[in-house]
Length: 427
Image (cartoon, rainbow, N blue to C red; front, side, top):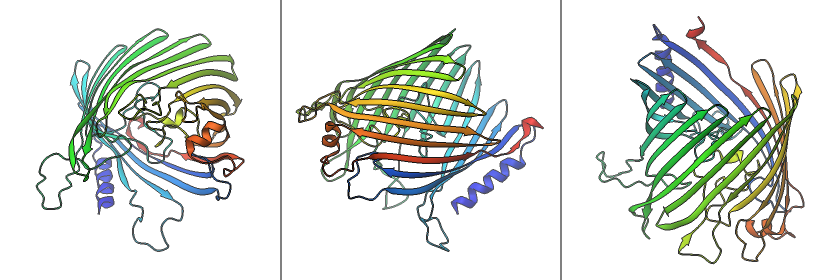
């Protein structure tokens, strides 16, 4: 019944558009992937993965001077996962991706309440994770202020699952949803100031994670603090950006965190109207292999991690937490091929920020190539990635070089269609 109620809600919004701006649009995004070493090294005897997944979204936005309302529903489908003539969605992936209201409080102040994307700057700590078919959202309340080129956001979240099988009335605030740095509480302050050719932002983030005792019973909260800044500069053909973030406090189940940091620097140069060159590095602190009572490993939490450290997702995409960290040195060239098409070529060299148990640091090199082309109302992207693993990568991923496949690669093709069904502002 949940699907029917959501569809009815869309129809009600569409009917009640008098004196308001209303848009109704969607997204259809099938992606075909060939995985032969995506995310981790594949064994020589293992078969490659091949599948097609589709994201389908329907979005409605309703705006008055006093408030805005936004609703986005989605389903993520893998072709063939439902048996024939099955009357329901077997993977239960149909969901409300966003549902929020923004209320105008006057004099630059507003509040945004509900399920929403939280994304800032280059999406290193907070991002929408649009590459993942399911995306990333937060159930949160934001108090927002914006004046001229200054903005300030204060965000709060309190997560609960009301998991009480004994009756309707939930007792206490124990939170049983865990994994992937899912938080019980969140508080943050984000401020950004822009000048001509330069911007600076500051983020102070506190996450409270539910602890569990040896029997799996909720037992207190661990709090992790993330503090840092993002700087961006642009002058003529040259641009640069930098990240500096620190973490301290505790991870889930009272794992002490100290001395954890992320440093990043990106340089860009527009060599011509058709060529954009890039050079950068990122250093993410890791944990010493002989340390057990605390960790110095930084984790970038809720960012769009697929965007960083190689498209094959070997680091910080549901993996590499509390590990040896990472030193990533990379160079790229993006070619404008004309007629809404481009080609990106990127090379990345990886090593651990800390030594592996063997003393090895070198992890390998990855080459990413992406061709993109826009058409009339839709776009096509084709990607290929190749990993050249070093000795440290085999040790890190727990497979010997003799047992691993000689070639580790990944290829994909993605079609994106974004139909706009209704827009009253254009009438």
